[in-house]
Image (spheres, rainbow, N blue to C red):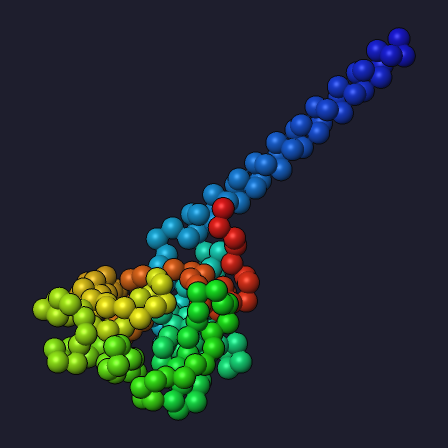
Length: 208
């Protein structure tokens, strides 16, 4: 009789634990679903009235939660608590440029061989970022306005197609909203991109 009583108590304990675990799992799933609903349809915005230069307004984890962070191809510089375009002078000395190397988290100032902001050395010749002049444009397919710039995904100097970015940005812009400059790459903006403030501060969830 005593053993039967013990078995009944153990069975009851397991049932209670199982129900509790199921409730906890359900709450977590519900929270995840709620966050997905809150974030659905919310895209980064260009809001110069709320965010500093080279920053966009990104949706947070709550419905009315927004946060300013670096635009794509811009780098967060902890010492000045600001964002600057990659491979530009930014907070660096006059003949330097701000670069984020692949294995690094914090950008650093390095010497610019061209000794002029907005210029990059390719095969012993300096070219200006964004220059559409054929004689000063090292990119192929110039008829499609491929110009020298920074790839927002790789943060490396590359040829970027400005005309397509401008067309997409203007067509998707909400009425009465300011249009983001071309070098903000708003159509490629995502929260926690490499080089952003959140990423630099280690506040982004690790990829599964």
